[in-house]
Length: 96
Image: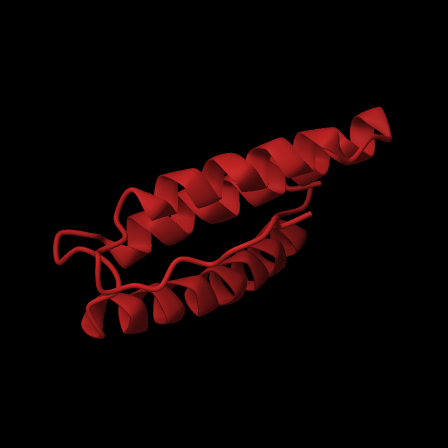
């Protein structure tokens, strides 16, 4: 769709930017409170997380199996945790 209809592409880009913006805001807040390392870049972390989510969702829908989404989200979460500081309280339990 994005290759064929520039209006649709622009609309999709705006929606993705808005959703990604929520992640940026949350990660910025976490970093500012000391939960993420000072060198954590909320914009890049949000982009990586959102890309994982979208890729996992596409594969899950294509294969009609939720495993690709679970794997993508677990990988994104593991990446985010590499920036976690000792001030942060780790979440317990599984995400699925």
